[in-house]
Image (cartoon, rainbow over all chains, first blue to last red; front, top):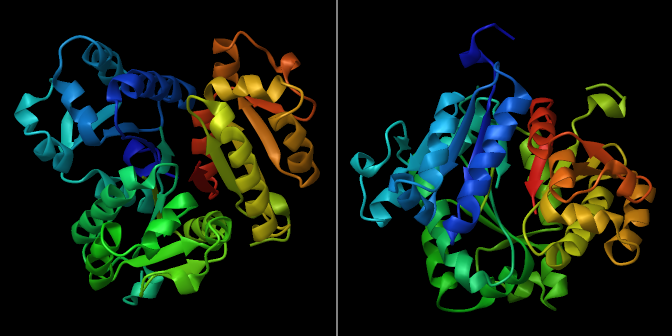
Length: 120
Length: 120
Length: 120
């Protein structure tokens, strides 16, 4: 196992489903706690799929937590397919949020690289 | 990594839970999109557990999508324990749907072989 | 792959979410079935996160099933963060239930060791 963070398998957290107001804030808190628990040597990404991507554009609420996650070095990734379904583009997202073409494809590739997977 | 598809780890998609009418069609669409995104070199299986297995016998609705998944080379696997709970057997399933004795056992073995796992 | 159970990757089952009365008994049954299906050579753990940890202290109901899981050699692990949110400590849990500091951290580390992961 090398010293480079890129070579140490990280953790992808998968958040998806209806009523994202009910679960996205908790998913963000859980991801932040996990990153603290795992320490600085492990990359952590929160992959957001489904109608929840709309909340990544909303000032206040979850977006207020976004700054904490980004400051902790956590990647916040919105599903490009979900954005299209919501009539949005990456331009609509809060600063610091990145886009992956398809959530499932990204989550599979990360696991093939050795990353752990958690479904919120 | 060999050239044989059987030696390249694939992806298992796990669909389970109440109210399958609400999630099985979306799970099928997500699985189909993932297979397209990942390209032809990766095997993809959709493992259906719980009351959703009854929908794999119903003409129309989700079963209409089944043909698209099978044509894309995606394996559709019903949980044998769930079939028994639903008072069904493999004979009741639409053509092309296979049965595994227990969904969780199959999902664990696939991951031990290196496959990625996604929970819908 | 050695003969020691500790060296053979096992299975972590992740149970979380609201209304645990509705899913914890089924999660326990699924985990017990999985352990039987996988045979004695594989370690199996059920990791309980969220309000469900309160049920691990309740006599009757799910706790009655606990004895079956423990007798089958399945580890029952409560999330320490969830216990704190519920105003509980490990002292409040039924005999045989262990505590991990954070469910997500434990689940990630197990997967980095090669264990399979199933989300209930």
